[in-house]
Image 1 (cartoon, rainbow, N blue to C red):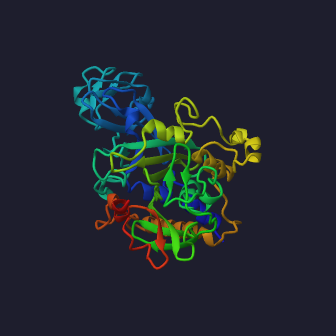
Image 2: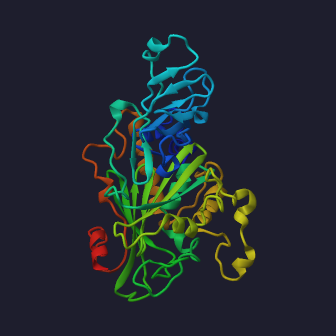
Image 3: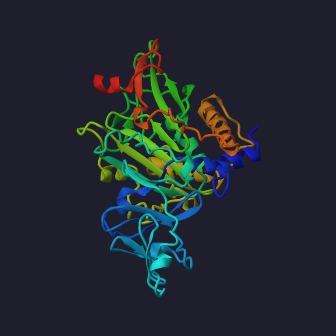
Length: 427
């Protein structure tokens, strides 16, 4: 049984919560680069682990992430003027550089000496893979920044879907590492067909298996774990197996199986205890493949101004039952809910703000869920007792060397030793 105490340890990230302290020892996604794309752009308010921050790009293109409350009278700097290499508070005109240095104290006479006496709280920041990354932890625990898995080189284009979901991060992440649900929940968007592997069309991903009950095999790693969901393929079921592998990169990133046109990753980042920012990234190192930003958001039914507002909140949600179309269900649509992300979010949000896990009835297809909970509870306990955070040791594997894959293999093959790069070369 998963106790309430264990559930709190797994789920809660605010304040001094052990899981939040663990996450603070990783580089965190503050926002997408496109949200602060131009010098002197509109400052962006964002929340991470229950803290409110402001992100801005100064006149020279340098990025800054500051505590949102001005140190003077605690007004929000998100309202500020971003100009002449600094962010100026509207209330009394105090101005701050990207590193927190005080550039001006307009309301204070003869303030030059006082300006040098303190700095506003600023955080280390990097930019890579379409995201602005920030480090919220203590400087003595900060690790060198490493690019995410979807940025093995700086010039690879990425397409990103961003959606706010009002529930806890752990139930969102558990959805990402749950291979079994895709055969049911997403069956309309992932129909079966006699194809060589997952095949992308304009509106679906064709799959070479009708098997809804995969057999899971897991390999634990120092960065999280990887596992294979093994299914019976449509073609050559007696001699072959359909393999879909998933990489869990602790604490909040998942590389899910790709299709023949683009690789896929998800980041399930906690805004606070009961809100999560869902990022879904599509990319491919081959310039002849991939999917454009507009096409990706349209495929996912996650276009700003259409399905989402300017804060990436959905127009369909649990309050309107995700506008589930029962007539479409009668005609063959499995869920009656438009878009893969919305189908997932209907399930996650229906669990409540923080899912109760003490009365679940788990099955063999939930092995990855069990391993995730065990591993992350242990990781949080390690940090709470003064040990290192999972995935931050000096000999850690660079994320750009990690990859998931899907493939029909001979039953004699070992999925653990199969090289995804070789799969790409063989196509």
